[in-house]
Image 1 (cartoon, rainbow, N blue to C red):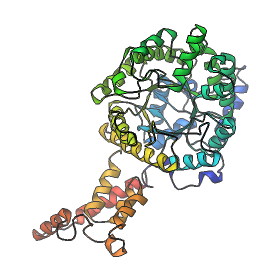
Image 2 (image 1 turned 120 degrees about the vertical axis):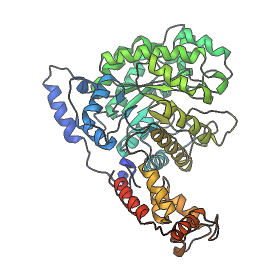
Image 3 (image 1 turned 180 degrees about the vertical axis):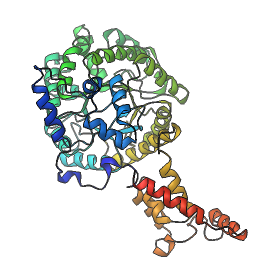
Amino acid sequence: MLGDPGPQGDRDFLGGVMALRDGWIEKREAEAAKANGNRNMSQMNFARQSVITEEMQYVAKREKLEPELIRSEVARGRCIIPANIHHRNLEPMAIGIATKCKINANIGNSATTSNIDEELKKLHHAVHYGADTVMDLSTGGDIPVIRKAIIEASPVPVGTVPVYEAISRVRRPEDLTFELMLEVIEEQAEQGVDYMTIHAGVMREHVPFVRKRITGIVSRGGSLMAHWMEHHKKQNFLYERFDEICKVFKKHDVSFSLGDGLRPGCIADASDEAQFAELKVLGELTKKAWEHDVQVMIEGPGHIPMDRIKEQVDLEMEWCHEAPFYTLGPLVIDIAPGYDHITSAIGAAMIGWHGASMLCYVTPKEHLGLPNPEDVKQGVIAYKIAAHAADVARHRPGARDRDDALSYARFLFDWNKQFELSLDPDTARAMHDENLPDDFYKEAKFCSMCGPKFCSMNITQLAEAESGQDQAERKQKFVELLAKVQNA
C-alpha cells in the first residue's frame, strides 16, 4: 500500500518484531525512579514540561508536522498520543484536530461467538486495511487472555471498555463496585491498554431524561451504570471517584476516552437533553483529568441527521475545551440495516470535515450481529474513505496527493499504478479483470464500461494530438507526484 500506511503496510506484525519503544521507556522509567516517587509517565506530563518525547518525534514525522507543534498540541490537550508504557511494540500515532483524521475498528468476542484466533484475524484485517486504533470489546470467554493476545499482536493503540470485564466478574450488574472496577482498570493498564472508555459522565439525574426517547440508552456501559444507580439510589461512582482512576492512568500513560453513555440510538433522539447534559459533565471531567496531566478524548454520537452534525462538533469544542472528539459514525438515517457502514460513513465524513479527530467505524453487521473478518474489512474501507474525505476537505498537508496521482494514472491508462494507489488494490484489480483479465488490457486505453470507441479520456488525448499536443507534461507530473506519495 502506498502513501503513509504506517503499521498497516505489508509487514507481518503477528510474527513478532523487536519492540520499537523499549529503549525510550526504559530511559524514562529510570528517570522516574529518581524523581522521589513522582511517577507520571503521560505524554501530556512531558509535553507540559516542554519535553519532546520520542513518541512525539515519531508522530511528527508520520504527520509531516513539526515536533514542537505536536508537543504544544498535546500540552494543551487538543491532541493525544495513546501510548501505554507497557505496549512496547506500539507504533505511536496521534489523535487531534491538527493531525490527520483517524479511524478505529472495534473487535472482540461475545459471550456466544468468536475465539482468540478469530479476533486476531479481525485485528490483522483491521490493521492491514488501515485502522489507526482498535478496541477490544470482548464480553465473554477469557477476556484477559484475549486482550493480552491482541495487545501483543497490535502495532496500533488498543482501547477497551473496562466495565465489560468487571460485569463478567459479578453475578448481577447491581453487584458491581468501584473497588472491582478499579482493580480491572489497573490490571488492564498493567497489561498495556492504551485508552479506556470510562462512563463517568452518566449522572443519576440524567436517567429520567431518556424516558422521552424511542430507543432509551443504547450504550452498554451507559445502560449498566444507569441500572446500578437506579438500583442503589446512588450517584455514579466513576464520577465521584474519578481522581482515583486518574492516578492509575498517569502511572501507566493510559488515555481517557470519556464515554458517551447517553448517546442517541436513533436520529429521533439526537441532540436531546440527555445527550447534552452528559456532554457538559464530560467537559468538567476533562479539566479534572488535565489537572493530573492525563490525556483525554471525548466520545460522541451515534445517530445524527446531517443538519445537526456541525452542532455536535461546535458544542463539544466549547464544553470540552477542544479535547479531541471521537465519534461513532454518526449514522444519518435508520432504515438501512445491513448497510450501516454506508449510512454512518456519510455522517463520519461530515463530522470529520467539521473537526472530529477520530471516527469509530461501523460495519455492515451493526445492529444485526457480531462482525466477521470480512465485515471488519468493509467497515475499515468505508471509514478510510470518510476520514480521507475529511482530510482533503480540511486541506491537511499532502492529503490530496494520492488522489491526484491516481487521477493521472487513470488518465494515462496506467492500470497497475491505478490499482496500487487505491485503498483496496486487490478489489480494484479483481473488478477490472472480471471482463478484461488478460495482461494486454493493463495497457489498453479503455475499460469494459466504455469500450475502445467511447472512452472520453482516450478521445481527449486523440483531440489533443490533433492539435499537436502530447502527454509528456502530464507524464512528468505523474512521475513527480508518484515519487512524493511513495516517499511519504
